[in-house]
Length: 314
Image (cartoon, rainbow, N blue to C red; front, side, top):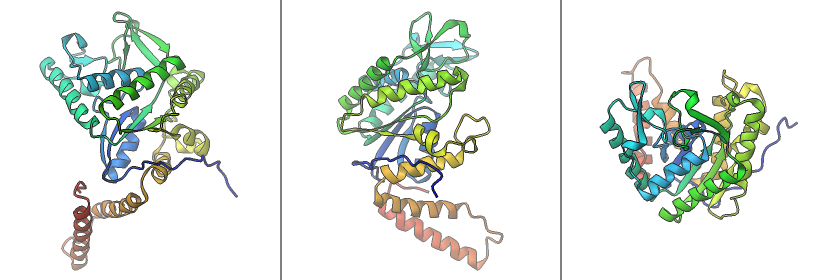
């Protein structure tokens, strides 16, 4: 008896391998998936400008990176003892103005160097709801706890999102024509926007994304649909009832890896997993003969793996 409806996912024609260089951008769920890549020792860089939820803000940063448009003093502001930038996440904010600008511009050039080497770019969109700064009339990536009265909340139209996605693709292909795109929608529920509003927001993202899927270099991974249809139960949510819990993240990763990671690399993942678990092992008697034998076998496994994949480090 089957208790769930399994979503069919087309196997990638350009699967990820241990030679692949992955760049992940987007919402907090992008970070969840990146942690899995990191655990299995893939080459991945995640959100060099911090977590970004909406397509327009992601496009702005991609434009800065591809065209090497540096941040200047007019792009930053001082609030609550820190220098902030509306285009990036608050985790980059800094009490020193010069250091902050230096960090932002270093991130641009570092990201460009990463982008031109990237084989697979994953972008996870979280919401269509955005905040527009009333003074500048610009959509912000993060409000940095600036008073609400300085912003106007609005819902991005499907047409605006579609155009933003296409602009992002065109910009990246300008710098890296062979880059493969994997788009997905975050399964995190943005209930602060409202229940109906959250559904509307996700629907705009999904509709816009599927309008761009006719390009050969683009695939859509249904993480949102897996959460809604395959898992479909509050036991798969964290205690806030908004974010997927670890069981859900592990399951979505499993569905991703079986379709987007090469068969050969999945075998390597088994070896990495075995080593990672062994590294967590703590002996009651570290000096015992059995533990020394265990360590010798572990070192042998690590040396064998790293000799074949020099980019892997434990």
